[in-house]
Image (cartoon, rainbow, N blue to C red; front, top):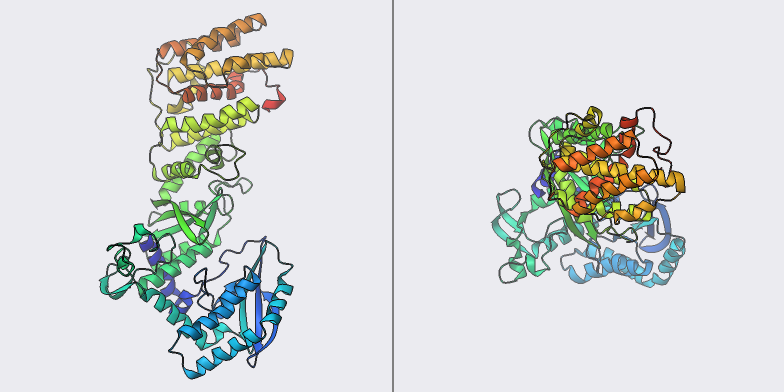
Length: 595
């Protein structure tokens, strides 16, 4: 993955003829959100005397003038330019602190440069109460939406317009890398023998040498370069590649973030340029042309663009989570070809058709892999969600028992609370159809024998779902669920209540319960004098399907109840098939809670 990022960075550096300094400079606010405010707080000095503090609009086109590069969180950055967190602390540690550290540690300063730094620092110290007062006055109206960069101007010039600040920045970066290095060793990225490699220069903070697990050679830090030796050329290329990803190819995905990393297999540079421009320029395209709805991501959907590419490139998806200043890799999906994305699109469209959906999307999956309880503040099922996403993009099989467990968790909750039960059940149903179409789940067969002498319309109804419903037991359970829903509608129609619900055990029924449920339903229909020909046909089919499937179903309780809940949700469709245009009023879905 890092090699791919390095190659991307190399191409950008060569294409734009970038110099080392421009690669090292960072954009403090790489992704400027519309609802946020971005400003630049400037402390001005004229003739080496403090003049004023003022606010100007942050301009991403002035990155080279701001000369920002983040340093240690408990010390100055690489230049006197920093993100403003706390006015007093940021000023003393990041701005004034930079000048103090340079004068203290740099013995190689030329006399002119040293005098320049000394005079500015003295003025900062002398006028600090006034400067801090002005900063606090200007920032007191800041809100949580305000993002502020603070730096200085000297004689009307930004620090990036002075050679001294550029020179010190380069020296500080090189010295940081030199603390853990070795000579005449092989770079782990490009594989070439280099004059010098470094062990603490990774642009990504998911690698660190301050933890025991990353130290080799008897926990000696000076030998930790052996873990991850990188040459200066690769360091710069990875930094440039990372910046490009942050600014152009970082997307939101249902509460998570991922980087889209293109990897070019064939083709000339113009192919790379054309593709990268397409990725940068199409950040709001959706998979569906229906009202610009989203499929795979909620804010920045470019996968339709990617799916149109030929297999001369593939894509890596890096899901990452920031914890303070550290980065944690949640998932890496490698080698996803455009042809796989096309396959996903095709499966999505078939689910739309089968389920009469306008736009099936990954929110249907996130529904079941977000939080263990709706009341939880943070999503605690991200790992499971990403495992499912990984299977979708790579074709890995998903264990159906695992899926039923999570589907039934939400279905039971909706059933017991009488909240969105049909919608939740339909989402689970659509997910299984989607997984089936992508061939990442296997349902198996349980001695299926088509009941040729029964209603062909019901047979066709099950056949359209393919392998998902190609099982006698599952069909029988579904039809028991259909009959149950018709009984509940009858009870609600007559009594505005559903007393039969207590027989469903909160959707925790086993094989014995399902078999015993069928005669109870028939008996209740007889009590209501409502066991008409249509219901008898459904009951007959359910009985024959269950008998045809034999005993000892070898299905988990979750799987049994999922298909039962699916039957409840499909009751209207089955009723339409059985009754055609003459659907009795009591069979129509009339309960407002199920609308």
